[in-house]
Image (tube, rainbow, N blue to C red; front, side, top):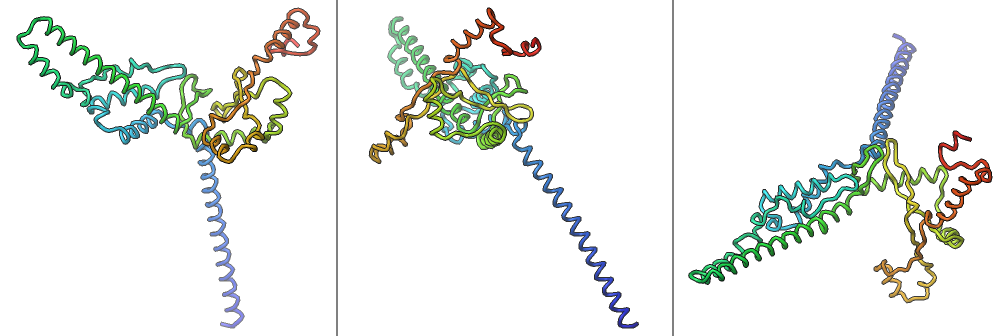
Length: 327
């Protein structure tokens, strides 16, 4: 075989090898792009309001686990009593909007005998001495003994009531407030949804960025003070309500607002006074502003009067959807 033929075969083999490597690289690139698209799709859906909230069973398990880690077992009572408390916690988590859980409901089926620190063993010494003293005595003494036992039972019941009240008000509720953002939803009617604070922060940040890209802009302190100096009402509070394809911004026009007083007065204070103001924010002074609807109610009444008596002076103004069709 000649030398030129051998070189031609080698060059063709190299070309086939390069073509095969190129096709393999293209296949791997396509697979990587598909995997990347799937990953981005999963990440984008991970923070959708409809599927990013925690289930109520997960919230209940979290609260119960933390409570068992913090509270001594004797304070939680016997296992049957803890199962009852767990059901009460679940009932609290499953509450709908405007519903309440009373102390009487929390105390239902909770028995004093199931708490070792409130059982009869803690008062047996007193009961035995009372029985020894009343043996052979008059009926008045026995009656007083019964009254004393009733008083002890009432005292134990009140102590248990205070303990259950503290358990829910000072432990269960703060646990929910510290770890979840609880809100209603447009598609869930009055059902409440529990979002982890980190997830809800991501949702609200995305919604705020979308608002800034559309028709809103952020204001600095100088601009805010300049706007507030020309009017008697402040800015309404804004919150986000989850819906099917995102969140909806809702402004409360009936609520009052406040804004910190100018920081110029703090500059003249010592460093220690400034540090105390930072450590104790309740000492910071605020300017309070009236609600928007409260300030504009007189103007609204005038416009409604013109609408009823002299509608021609309003020109092409409309007040609701019905006016759109009438015009």
